Length: 453
Image 1 (cartoon, one colour):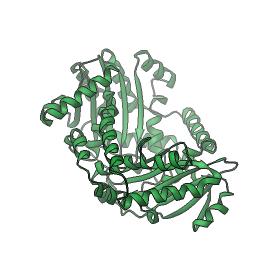
Image 2 (tube, helix red, strand yellow):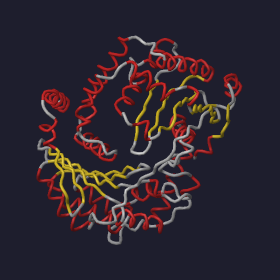
Image 3 (cartoon, one colour):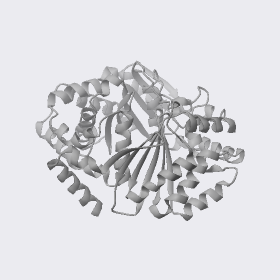
Image 4 (tube, helix red, strand yellow):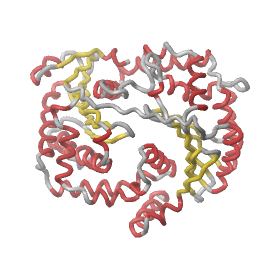
């Protein structure tokens, strides 16, 4: 509750103050030619530190998808000095948490804890980056666990639908393969590949450091410079992957045995030219499927009773974007669900919606926006995202006012570009018996679920 009050006050002050006044809390520095962004937060004696690497899963070799994600996940699996158990006990002793996040375009390593323990914690983290050996025994164990998780997707049809939808909707782009790899690619990854990958990220990839915490957390500069031994120089590789977007149009039935529900995903890949107005993507998708009062929720759940929930999204990374609608229903109701979604989208495309719904959606999005940043770590991630996309921080502070100015006509045009029915990749996950129902709507391509594992 305290955090929520602080955030509300922050945005109330923000609306009455200039960007330059608010931005004083965010400071940029350079540590040995590495960019550093510090968000000063003196409220608590804790820190959150993120290492940003300007490359991600696109660096994986064609037959070794998942290599980067596996490397970052296994950094703590052992070094020449410490076993995985010793590393874990060490970091746990200092109450430190760390996590990794790999996308196609970039990778993150995040660590947090008490400021008083930042020195020994970062010494341990830098030791991992400098000396991780990825022991064969631990590698075998991790690959087995990943294979088991993939095979268990048969029991999680929602996750399976998301995975299939990404691969099919982005089929003609470099971003279609899952960053965590597939069964066929995991078996190709060896200990040497992970060592080489770590060496590449240490020596060749551009880095940026993000810190949130009190001024005392800046002691991390000494540790990172001396222990991690990174420096910004000529080898500052930044991943750039331009491509021409091409939609994989059509209806795809992903068959799973004994499914008593049908999962539905609808959407497409967006080119760089289609993500130049992120605020319009955000509002258009929220208006369609961003809460209980959204148009799709009212049509699908409240009026037709076809599903418990439905959501929509549209957003971009640096070089590409995605739009999508996600829901589920009973097997016998899939054709009706498709019809309701299609008609709802058509009404928005043609500007046939109530102005009250439009204004209510604006108010909901603007009102809920501050609560996306209850934690300083969430705020930090927003700064990372803006830097990655090369968008000025001013956009973050101005977003509520930008949304206020969006017009009905802009939303109609945007939704038509995002969700025009004939341009969509439509993925349906359910039993093979659905084919008889679905063939009434046109050509259906049937694919067994194993293809996406």
